[in-house]
Length: 177
Image (cartoon, rainbow, N blue to C red; front, side, top):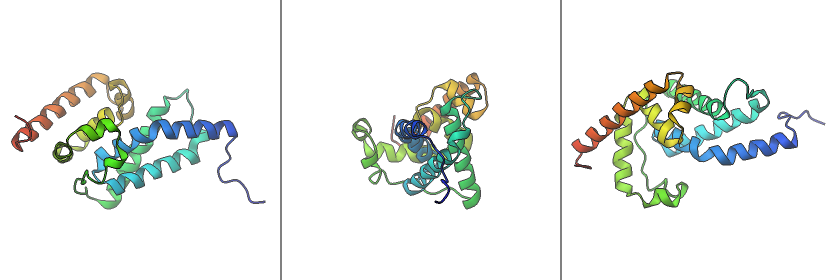
């Protein structure tokens, strides 16, 4: 009999399944906002959940929240991806993404999404990361601060400036007035 590579009890397996279903959409959007490419986002989300599966038994709730642990893994995967590829990809075509989004997301005009993602890709890495955590992953400012290892007030300041910059970019593009 071969050794079990993923020694996981039934209860752990159920817990992992719950985590996967709860966090997959948040992690996917977070990563998509960071990398701007559907295929890359899908690959990186798979990589994140593979790492979570392998290291699941080592997670210690006493050291931090599960969401912080998951988004730290995701952030590190993104950093490694960019280091390995040494560049950013072009923004995605949202027509490919719509099947993955909820009805609420589909209601939003697809052209606005294209411009918004292009504008997000114009932000610096730190701003893009905070936007992705806040709006892609739907984290609170406190959770973003934990993941980014900065203060909550710093998150608020960077978020404010990032949104102002996005608005300016979209105005220059004629998307908003």
